Image (cartoon, rainbow, N blue to C red):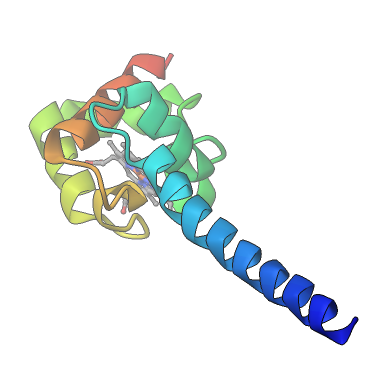
Length: 114
Ligand code: HEC
């Protein structure tokens, strides 16, 4: 009786641990698929600030906010996102993004500005 209870408890602990171990890399992998599209990166890493203008982030829907940023040229913008700018953390929080992926996310974001 007690023995089987102990076994079940042990199995419970093991399966919770196993699930945690299995799901952690899976969750991470979701955000780190190689060759992610700019849109995928945007919707994971950037929309939280740029969708609503969090902390002064230029909103995707606000073309006036983008005009001066676009005017400085894309290379500057890429570099600002890669290095971080003001409230925006390095790589716009996509710490696993390659430079090219960050650029793709910027391109996607800019393509959505109306
Ligand atoms: C934590 C909030 C936050 C997240 C997440 C974020 N940004 Fe930003 N972003 C900002 C803020 C705030 C600014 C304005 C910074 C300033 O002008 O000082 C900004 C500015 C920018 C700019 C304009 C840079 C320039 O040169 O004027 C681009 C492009 C940009 N973000 C792209 C991205 C991309 C791409 C992502 C996702 C990979 C992202 N951001 C994620 C907050 C964020």
